Image 1: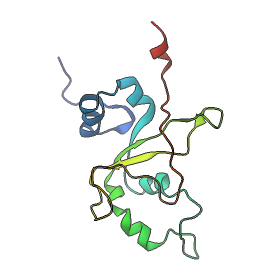
Image 2: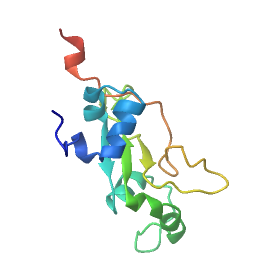
Image 3: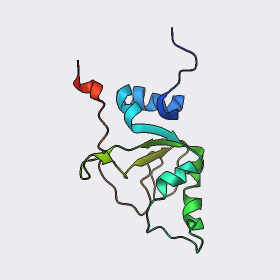
Length: 134
């Protein structure tokens, strides 16, 4: 019997988990190791890490970027993994798929959002050791 309110890993919402596990057929162990739900101003902590982002004199991110990424406060899933060029340490790179995407003429609403003013990379997911044993 299925529990009515299953607890999904890393605070993923039921819709996010269904998208990843069912619709995208990602193994639950990979989801647990690499994906998490972020929301509120925490989303800005993940997205706004570049030193090249315009800031006010007080260090606050410029209001244009805050407005452009306001949709991120509603939450979404974040994926990141390991950095093969930095001794397999946790990678700074990541992608954010908002629950309610920003829609404009330049951004396809189905895409994930990279960090602004930050280099992109290919995902190198954390590979759970359980996959290598039988």
